[in-house]
Each structure stands twice: as structure tokens, then as C-alpha cells.
Length: 260
Image (cartoon, rainbow, N blue to C red; front, top):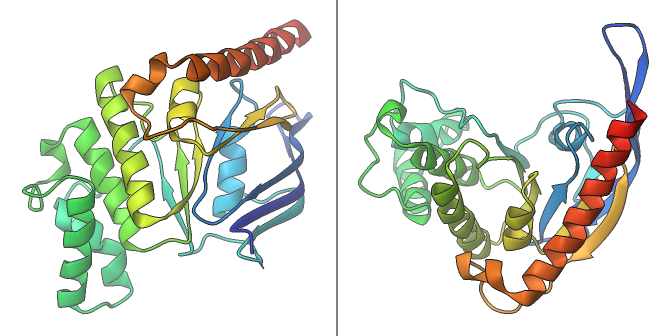
């Protein structure tokens, strides 16, 4: 069974001027179990709106969204979300943040401690269990946010430009870490980004979206051999795929500007 299936999804809304805006048009995509799927597209194409619909935070105007064959109608524990702004509770330590969802599930303290220890180790925060978020760097905060989400063992991990606020060097480190985490935990991921390098470093499959109304312009399978990291950026095959995607996005952005 497919992990995520989206069929004929459309989203319209009314803007402040009373005009109807068609944000997403006839979205169809399928993500298989353990797959890392990335969506890229020009600004305003509806990437985040689509992710929010999958997360149950927004509703589609029509169409079907299913996770493991079950229709998505509201937020659920089967989907974990990681945003750009970390979303940590500032008054809780790293360990307490990671255990927050487990505590709500009324899990026993010993079991919570074992799970939090596991994921804090996976994201490389051992030694910072008792640190408050204000004492952490941006990258460390996002590691804690990822650990908290994974500790709840979601069926599908949804990530909306989670590294967008980080500096370039930290971002590359976090990309390599996330790639390692997704392999270790075998988590299915739907990842939103505007960064083509990031999409190619992380994705098994990339969906390129058009300008508004956003639709899937092209599906690209990333077939890069070996473990991906910062050295991958200079490979001829990487540069070829990057150029192809960049050209598509440039054309979409150009056409969008001419429409205005």
C-alpha cells in the first residue's frame, strides 16, 4: 500500500478583495513507504498549502488525500510536522520537549526516558538533554524539534522548509544529518523547499510545481549513486539535474511575472 496518495486535489480560497483564487489544481502524487519525496516550486505556487492539507491543518476544496488508505480530514498522530520556526516550548528542556507528546499519551516515565534518549542520540544532542532552547543554536533547536517529532513515531514526516532559517554551513550539516536519520529510522518524508541543491541532496523523488494555480509540472527520480553529502554538489550528474530543475522554475517564475 502507498504511504501517501493524493488524487485530483484542488484548493480555492477567497482573498481579502473578495476574489476567488485557485491555489492548487489537479494535484496527483503518490509516495511509497520509506521514500523521501521533495516538492519544489516558484514562490506562491502552493507548496506549503499542499503540505498543510496533508497535515490536516487545511482542507482541500475537493479531491482525496489518504495516508495508508485512510482519508485525511484533520491532524493526527500518524503525521508529524516540522516547521522552519522550530516550535519548541521555551520553558522545557530538550528532553522534556522530546517527551512532550509521549507524556500526553500517558506513557510511563521509564519508557518515555528510553525513547527520548534514543532520538536525542540519533539527532546528535547527547549532553544537551537538560538545556533550554534559548541556550541552543538554530541548528540544535531544529535537531530537538526533529527528535520530538520522531519520538512519536509518525507514519509520515512532513517538513516545511525546516532549514530555511539556518546559515549556509549549518544547513548543509543539517541536510546530511536528516538524510542519515531518514535512513536509520526508515521514515517516509514529504519535504518542502525552494532550494534545488537541498532537494537533490535529500530526495528520492522530486515533484516540480508550476506557478499558481500550482500543479505537478514534472516528477523526477533522483538516481545519484552512493551516499549523498556536500561532495555530491560538484558531480556532473548532480549539476545536470540541478540545471534542468532550475530552468523549469525560472520559466515558471518568468511566466508568473508576465501574468501580473
